[in-house]
Amino acid sequence: MNRSLKEQLKVWKQDHMAVKQEKQKNKKRRREHFTDSELRSLMGMDRPIYSRGRGGAIRQK
Image (cartoon, rainbow, N blue to C red; front, side, top):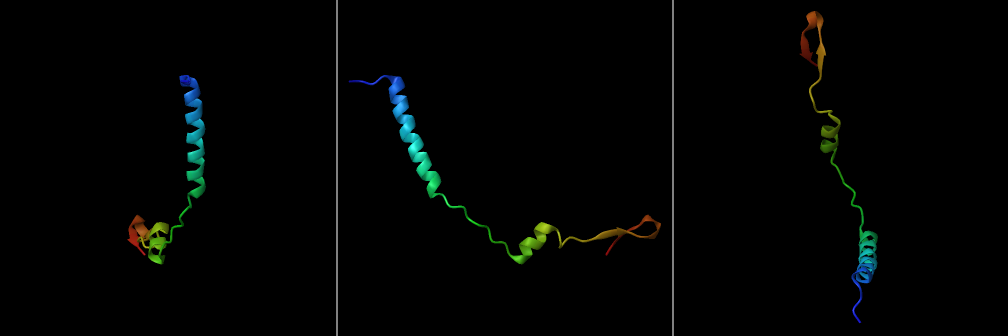
């Protein structure tokens, strides 16, 4: 009448894996939408640009 612990674990694992696979099927990946200003900051376009001038001084362009 009572199942052994090993048999119970087998049944639980089968049920658990079925539920886990269903959850994975239902997941949808969301796309991120960035604004132009966010893309510029991510690419580093808004940062100041420095260059070396005559005499080794660093100047901002």
